Image (cartoon, rainbow, N blue to C red):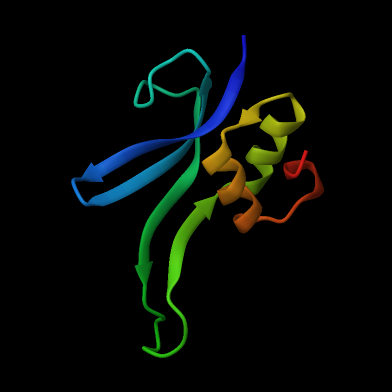
Length: 94
């Protein structure tokens, strides 16, 4: 049983929204996951004060992500890039 951390797409056309999920590798992209680790909104949002750089909203349970990586879950390429942005941890680079 290969467990993967990957993104499940939700939202409307031209307005994507992703859940970061833990699921078995052979299941479909939007099938029921084992666990939902967080969310990712790739649409850039402006800063709260109206000035500064725009940002992409990432909400992630870092402790659970570290747990799943520790027990052998393999992140997909987009999930690996997003996890490294959310928490620069040594084990994510492996």
